[in-house]
Amino acid sequence: MKRKTSVELLDSDSGSPQEVAASLADLDRINRWFGGIGTTQTMIARVARETARSSFSLLEVAAGSGLVSKEAARRLAKTGVQINITFLDRAPSHLAGTDGVVGDARALPFADGSFDLVSCNLFVHHLSPDDLICFASEALRVCRTAALINDLVRHPIHLGLVYAGFPLYRSRITRNDAPASVRQAYTPGEICGLLNGLLKKTSAARLEVMRHYLYRMGIMIWK
View (cartoon, rainbow, N blue to C red):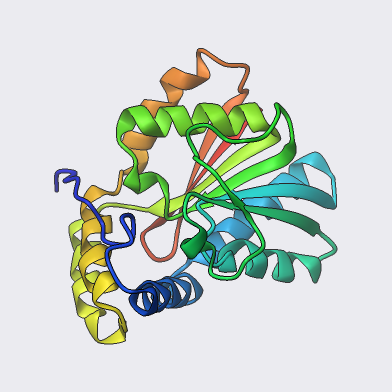
């Protein structure tokens, strides 16, 4: 299944405020039910174990409602790990009431080393290979410990599951964007191929790839 790029409606706010809000709510449900929160939670827990730390500042890029990082932080707090989150999105409408920063992921409006972690969820599949490298470079610049990428895995079965889930979607935007997202998602091998070249040009230490339920991958770029 070849990667096929397309313009997703939510990216261009091609809908009424009510439709955009409904699509963001759809994304929240998808993240709750199909591995989005768990993937981010697992990556942060791994950082906590490896660094033997229990408190982190985190920048969530393309945050939308911020559900994934907020819920992961809530779950991690039960294990003694505290997360202080800053939200960033390019569109104020996507922040959905979250107190966040409006900015471009390819030119993060923060100084070097401003956060322990930089995280994103369901974001990098929107990016061309060049833009993905640009974002990863910015994430490494701004973080002190690791950049965390939580995204879809492109696979024909995944595409079939997305179509089977149409009755769950409340927004026409989601019915357009969900299959488009799978088609333009990367595979773990493609992500590694792109980012390994970047690591050779930076001070990043290593790259880790994890597979998660349901057709999710977690990419950890360690400083």
